[in-house]
Structures are given as C-alpha cells and as structure tokens.
Amino acid sequence: METTSRVDAQASAAEGGPQLPSARRTVDGYLRAPFPWYGLDEAFTGPRWLMQVGTAADGTVEHGSIGHGDEPSVRNEATEDKEKFAVVVTVAENPVRRSPDGTGVLEATSVSSAAWLAGVGLLTFTWPGQMDHTLRDDWLDQQTETAWVLADDLTGPAWSTLSLPVDGVPTQFHYRESEFGWVLAGATEAGVHLGAYGRGMSAYGLGFAVIKDITAYAP
Image (tube, rainbow, N blue to C red):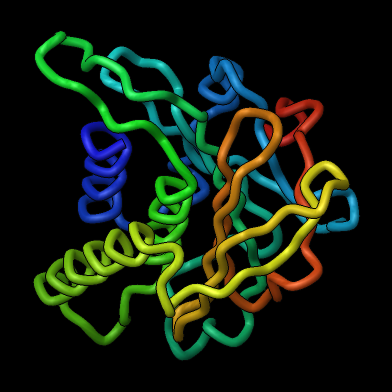
C-alpha cells in the first residue's frame, strides 16, 4: 500500500488539510468499489455522512471513509472537548500485485494499512491551531511518519487489544489512544480491513456493520 494509498493519503493531508463538508466526494466513488462498505452498526442513531474514497493509479477504489456524529473540525481549545465523532475506514483486501506500468510490485493491504489510514485521518483534524502554516506542515509530516511507524508495529507497546462486534461477530482490534483521539484497526470476514478513529466518542462499545445502502448516506 506504500505506492498508492500511503503516498496519496499523505499528499491529501499535507496539501488539502481537513476534509470539509463541501469538499466531500459524491456517492459515485463509493458505488464503484468492488467491496462492501462498513459503518457503525444500528446502535448508533446519530448523523452519518460520506467523506472520500482513495483510488489506485488505474482508478480502482481501494479504500474510503464514512463519518458519524459531529462533523469534525481542526482541533482547538474551543472545540476539542465538544466534538463527538467517529470515522470508519474500509480498506479492500488486496494481495501483492504488479504496478499499473508493470515496473514494480505494490504492497498487499493489511490491518496495518487500515491503522495507518485511520491515524492519518485523525491527524487531518488535529493540527495545533496556534501554529503558522509552515510549522503546521512540518508538524504534520512528523506526525504522519510517526503514525506509519506505529501502524507497522501493531504488536508493540503503543497498542492494546479491544474486542468489538463486526456484523455481530466479536472481532479483535488493535487500539491506541493519544492526546488527539483514538485509533483502531482490525480485519473482517468479508474480505476488507477496518480502521476507525474518533474524538469525544468512546471506542468502547462501538459496533460495525456492512452498509446496506450507501446511497442513503449521500447529501
């Protein structure tokens, strides 16, 4: 996933900043995905909204995010204790494969891929507001690399385990907390990896389920 999702997500986070409601993609990208999308299960009764999808060089949809709760903004003193949101990231399970130009091999997706995308997703809404633009970019680069290192070591001391239901089946997730919020990642029996991140909404007690009609999430 290094060649496509990691690089694309890092560029999006560094250049585009937080994903604002007006910038979200339409449901069309989600409909092109050859895998099921996941969100919080029916126990969550709050707002749900589309965010964005990530594609490979050939246009194939590889991952995407669904938001739940308050629409997050950049973390600052006025909002950090008020916002309550959780974002679910669905990542297609792909084996090691040739790059579109045939010159190399792309990494297989894994639970680490989901953990990294979730970690970077949280970072896009946690830039310290007191930093100027130049320092903020440096901070994001450093934190993004840290998120990658942590995601590559899911058995390390930064992570604990958490059992949450996926389609009603207890599933083990890797879980970590930071001053910015929480991140978790795990696998499903449906051929996708799940990542999630949030702030103000506890990860304990959450459940995940296949989204039966993604068009219902369209604005």
